[in-house]
Length: 249
Image (cartoon, rainbow, N blue to C red; front, side, top):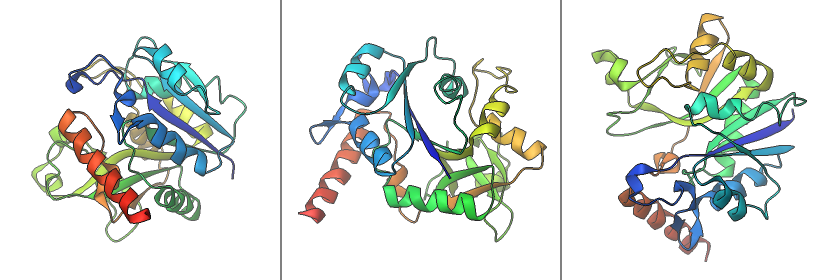
């Protein structure tokens, strides 16, 4: 099955206390986005699309040596809107689309390979990478059909019931989708929410309503899915990257 990858790299990163695009902040002497692109390219996709936005030319120039297609999201109207920008670049593509976050550099290629393998084995239209964490407060919860790989619901913390909030399995923001289903569903989502944005997670709601199969693959290493929103989280990721390099050397 052909694979294309979309990397989300349009955000400003307001809480980083810097005007630099979040994906260009350095960890261990390299911009975050380089780690994510290296991982993406190790999977040998037929196409890699980079969604850029805030200070787009800076990000475009910083990634110009890589075989990626940069697409500008302007204005920035949410995660669903970001993926919509890739549709023209992928209009002839038929296969699976892996979506990665440019500010989450710790996801390993072998984890992504297992995610894609499960997606195929389960004949799912969408598969989400998850992890169990000790304190899931604030994270979207993944509600499974008991004892199976199948997902019944992905629900934001603020919308979850007391019972659902006890679930420790969270949505990492890394997904595999059937390409045709994805873009068809994106055409059906709306901005009818508090933020007036297009949410990529609304695609799952369409899958559930249509009775289509959604699965979850859980990594046993929650550190992998760490994203970066603050300078403190950047330091945490940097420590993890250093320890990985020490293991190699």
